[in-house]
Length: 639
Image 1 (tube, helix red, strand yellow):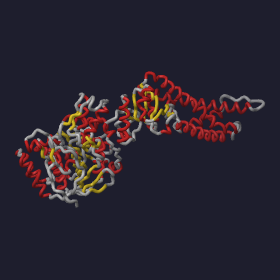
Image 2: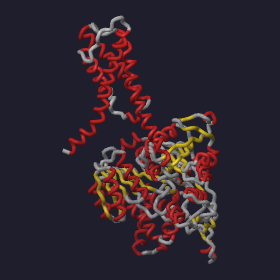
Image 3: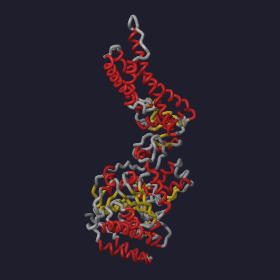
Image 4: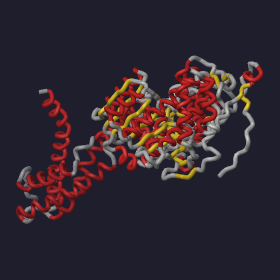
């Protein structure tokens, strides 16, 4: 009963509009006839209803319905709606002419009426719609006293659409635009004046009594966005921004939302446009298994795979809370997706064999790893166990079961490694390369990239928490830099690389320009409405064990060539001896069982010739200063 009532209730507005339009058609027909007959000396009586009137209403009404005239709302009537009215009137007049011709060959209808009918009908139909919209807009404008006054930066398409949305909600009242285009100054957009350039934001905000600034320039690059944010900060007012189109398409924001300016908006990462056709062709209808599925990269890989056609996803995770969290997220977002959660350690051969048996995946993404540089310097055994031996266990099991593609998520720290994380990840790369010896059907693909913004354990959530507590924000060194990209961007490029990868291939993602961590901290403090050094202190603590000032993306002995995607480079892998790698893994397994860290360290250094551990002065001299000294090394010759 309730569903029947709901259908009737939802149909009433359309029936009311349809009835209105038919009344307007009848009225238009009556007015045109009476005006035509008024020109005669003796005006005949024109009936209010006749067969001709019925034909007109029937023909015009059918055209209205066929044109979908009742799918829109009067509240949002605009030029496209008027264009639809014009087409409906023109086509309706043809239907009326055809109907009257077959009825009585126009025996009782003046030709002048037929000629004027479509043009007059547009006015009868369009005027009430525009009056209704103007009345609703006027109501919204009259309620602006209770709404927050908004100053909009950017008088382009995004700004124009923003004004429409703000007026519809009634929560905010747009008072003015600012734009650097001088030709726009003094003009009006949707009735809102453009009062000047962006640099005058502080003065105009005071004059207009604005309470909020909104940046309506979603396509700005990093330097321009940093400038605009600095202008907003100078006003002392809160500010928001219109979300980027890619955020709306990925479901991270809703159209019309106002979002806080995030640190990724200031770092210059341009939107990634992968080859979705290639990715969907590779993933569509297939099964994938993700190790470390509850982590930052692992969970986003699961979402991206589900979004782009995977039929079944196996989630392998050792952390029960992380596993149940990503399982719940996927179930809510993708109710038709088949999800196979597996709780366990991917380094356990029985666990990975069970996961592969129940899922029978076409591709395995190995995202499980230990990644915290200072911690791993003190836990060599666990780093080798998780980053090397577990990788070998998963990769070998994929080969034995005939998995089509194995993707290793690596790191830029594997290039010229100076710490345990980099060395273990480099050895994991070499292990995969050794397994892909030409006899295996499995493609082994390695993807390297740097830090991801807002990942668990990264500096962004650490800085955010320190700022929330009032500081200080701790930075290791004033000169330290790192490469950054967003989690969705990294995951999308991983899929792009894996979809078109060759056997034993190593890919490096274009990370853009390195970001000074000091600048990152200062920007995050400003985004929180504070001033660095005044409201929130920045303290430099010195580089931690295993850390260096700058990371490298490319190895001097690896040649790199572009791929079909501009942000992915393929490395020419260095030669690896499968026998040598197998011997090293055997020694590591034995030393791992015995907890022999000395042998683990020795084997790691021999297996990874590029591994040059950093020497700290406090280790060499017993001093307490935390200063990193890079050892001298011989210059290499490029091939």
